[in-house]
Amino acid sequence: MDRLTSMSVFARVADLGSFTAAAKELRMSPTMIGKHIRFLEDRLGSQLINRSTRRQGLTELGRSYLDHCKHLLVEAEAGDALVEEALSAPRGKLRVATSVAFGSYSLAPALVRFRKRYPEVSVDLVLSDKIADLLEEGLDAAIRVGTLTDSSMMSRSLSPYTGVVCAAPSYLAERGTPTHPRDLVHHECLRYPGWPDARRWSFFGPEGEVHVDVESRLTINNAFGIRYAALAGAGIVLMRGELLADDIAAGRLQALLPNYTTQARARQILWPKNRKMTPKLRALIDFIVETYG
Image (tube, rainbow, N blue to C red):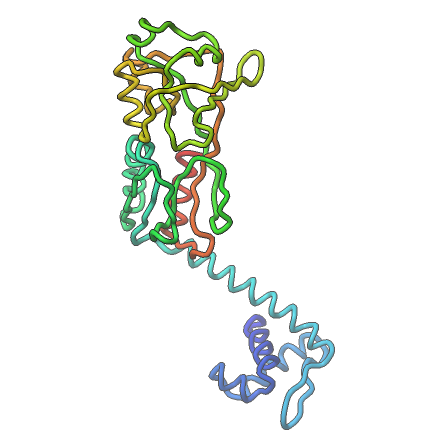
């Protein structure tokens, strides 16, 4: 007989209190129930159940053995579920949220590769610079910059968000080129108002950490708007390098402060803690970590 099946039968007899009740639930004959119990007892060389005409009670050894049986059965169920998930092809629809700029220039092209890898998965990409409520808005996952404070979410860390400081040659010709972060207090600095501590720009350089409170007469709540303003010569910008790379390469913007790096911000993909980890969501998380980890 299969030992795991016999353990399962034993656990149900113990919980229900009789062979008859267990036989009814498991759709076995009472005789077959008895054979499973005797198989275990013969194997162990000890009685597990005190039998009577009314109710079967566990022996002291039976009570201890029951705890181990239940633990093993739970582990076996978890193992079966793991294999079932691994063998299931990701399929269905995913709703994913992230910021407008990152979603447009980076995530959208990456999701084309994801769709080719998993053709049975469709993606609804929601772009907004407002922090989305995943549960309320029916989102499966989101990619965010900043420290996770919501205990109802699970997350995987991605590479940190790091920015580059640059400005248009026309602005630098008019206002001069800063050589130290503290020079920024004498310049127009374009800010995104949604960032925590948006006025404080932090750098690391030869003398260690440097913090500068910048001034701006123009704040824009969209990264593309800030980029176009910088191209027009409105001021100095601090933004993620990927968004500005083509402009810097073409000479439309000039990178500044080469001896300093900007402060990195944590970035992660997150999803609701109470949501079942489906094959499609697992595939997305693994792909995002592979791409941006």
